[in-house]
Image 1 (cartoon, rainbow over the protein chains, first blue to last red):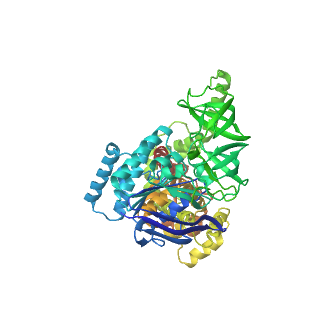
Image 2 (cartoon, each protein chain N blue to C red; image 1 turned 180 degrees about the vertical axis):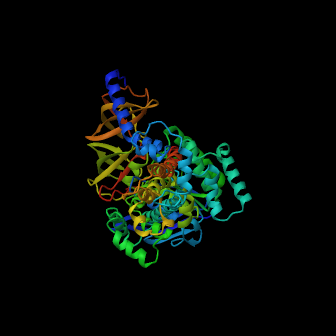
Image 3 (cartoon, rainbow over the protein chains, first blue to last red; image 1 turned 45 degrees about the horizontal axis):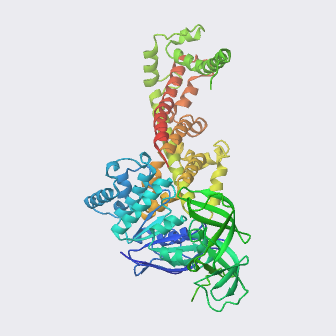
Length: 359
Length: 281
């Protein structure tokens, strides 16, 4: 086993397009690291550089203590699971898993032992003789993982492995990947654009945007204390509401003329200066009476989600969404009073979009 | 879709039947003619049912030959077979390798190489026949199988066909092989080649028939009768001089010339369809 260290890694494509702009990141041995971000944020490019499928334009990538910048993919001691599985269509499941070992001249009985074991772990023993096309999407996914497991690599790389599965299977496979990784204890790097996958799988969550890292932390940290407005709106569903506001004084900001209290606020902000106020739809308590820290909201329409309802409307002229348990608030409410817990207010600088929390 | 138009349907079948008849009748005639003796054919009243000379005609044609082309047709068939197989396999080998290079390797002037190959599509053998003849003659390859085969194996069609096929194979397959420790040659042998079986079969059918039917090129470079191909043999049997054409032998040869291409189509078509059904990228 080994950790992975990235030191100001850059990728510049022909035509001077910078896809990855100097990323530094340490991934501890045995941890599950998820790179998440919107399309084109450079997360897949970064993963492919770790795999050795893309050359590195600058910086250094280390697997364990070894710099692998110039090492071929096959010699990096990694295994990769692709989005479209990339199984060899003409080979049986067994041969698909054994192929990498055969190329490495592993003894036949050892190959058989490892493939059988991986098949047992993944519960695909009964289709070892079948061809990939005779398998369902979920089964193919398992074979792709089996191909990674048999190699006993230092690092697993996952490139959006669940995107091709239907919603139900995705949840099931997500749990299985997590369980498998815990059982094997192999360092894993997982790329996804799905923030639910990112939250549930990761020990270490890396949010990327525009070729750079926005924030690194545990899922709870990233959710509770987003460092930038981008992270705040990207992690969490429905996304965080961002309202334009003004600094009133220490621990107090105003939104559309209504003042609310804030716990996590940087000291020394000039009263009257513009600030962005972030509130998660699930952190806002609707109903109740106007208090010391409350906002009033005009409701436009309600979305039913079963267990919860989403109230869409406006606060101080800006779009706002509130999530509430079904039945908590009458669905035909036209006006809501939202009471705000000062601990749940996030403040961002409108220019730099960085968090204006306590230092 | 429900269609209740008996007349339209009748007309459709009638048109089809006429078409089939027009195409099939000459072939039928040739097969019938190969079962009669010369006199019956010459007097112009050849019946349309098989005659009794079939065994005699085919034995004589295959093992003794006609009066004009005195070589046994069996030998011509062997020559044709060697040429057709040589051309078909040569073309497949050359085009799959060049397509592999063009699709999977980055090298200077890759695009140029592709376009040069593409442009040769527009130049049929006949256009470059004199320079080709000169080269083959200078190399001392006249009246050899190499001379028959080599100039015809470069194939732009095949290269294009394989290129198009390779481009449909997802890049991840190459990447997965790289991670699995397969180099350029292993990827070709273990992944690309097995996936290309269908395309190879299709190309083989086309190129075998192309090779088998070659007329102009073998006519130019073979002078010895022992190197004659069957297509040239047919031509030689139909005399333009005063001598009587042995139509029964000519027709027997024609029928024999049809057999291998037909067999290739029938046999390869099964493989072709099987490949189509079973392969998935």
